[in-house]
Figure 1: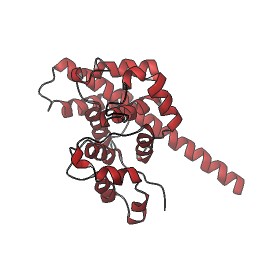
Figure 2: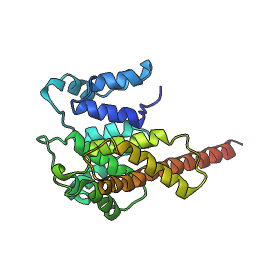
Figure 3: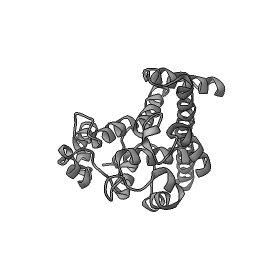
Length: 232
């Protein structure tokens, strides 16, 4: 029985459920995706929050966000790191907890976005990228797109480019841009310039996730070879 690993598309559904805009409860979303021998690993707070859906959007502690993040493929979060982020490194980006002492689902999505970007960018670059999409970081009202919908956007793009052959870096980046633009053009309220801004940051996020994926595969390959050499 391995540890829970959810596809990013499932993580999006889980976050939507926690926000109260999904037909299934958070527990139901997980049960629908997990093999039967892993359903007993669903954390208690997910079961508890599932019973409280009628109360509106459900808040999350940093520890709960870390647990959720570590369920997601190609994501590795540490509680101490997230605590440092919200208290120091990205304090002005994440802001104070929006739901009493708990963080909102949008803030949780923002932390997952930061984690993805942080795999290859420093915090200064991360802030610069996010400012292109979210404008005044502390004010969600002037966002071009919400953090959760942005997380969903680059998750959708990742799903679509899985089988794309990477034969030329520039062509691949162009394909990512075109795929993103196609998805965004359904947002009729956005101008062409705003769509382009979101596309640029989305491509950066997708490339960051893919880079981390290849780094992880390379490390696993080397570790496997080292183990084979020892046993040989």
